[in-house]
Image (tube, rainbow, N blue to C red; front, side, top):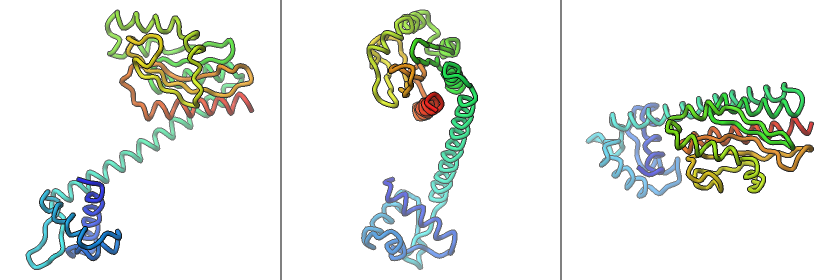
Length: 238
């Protein structure tokens, strides 16, 4: 189903729910600005797909059970997206409060890293000047991707060289994502690095982020890492 057909189907369902009258092409044309001919063609297609039908005495269409099911599934998907967004906002606010309450800049970095570990179950890393802080190695190795000793060795080799590699790479963007073989070192480690650079008076190399398997909830983790980087920057430069 195309986005336009989806829009028209939802409109047909909602109109019929409100009026109990079959929906015609003219009504939909006035609502969306498409020509009546275009609307009729799309309605024919939706009817062939089984989403709508029309009473014998009317040129208008009404939803079928399949059409109602599509509409309800759409509503549930939207509700779930709103719920996830609210949960993500709640988690991000909690992280901000924790970092703000940490006190000294070094402790703020540690708090930020520990918070990312708790939420993402990845390895958290933070760099600021001489400070290099890692936490969550047990969380990382608990992931099913690292059940074999070879993968654990590759991860350990990457982490042994992590600081010089990161300084050489010097990510410039606010948010940087390196997936699997995109990592200059540890190409076979099966790891993704999601890292945020933040401004700091203590170092030109200030970063916070996570290292985890390439199987990631990227939108959530990327938002968290970027939000934490911005919060650290505000706290440390206040």
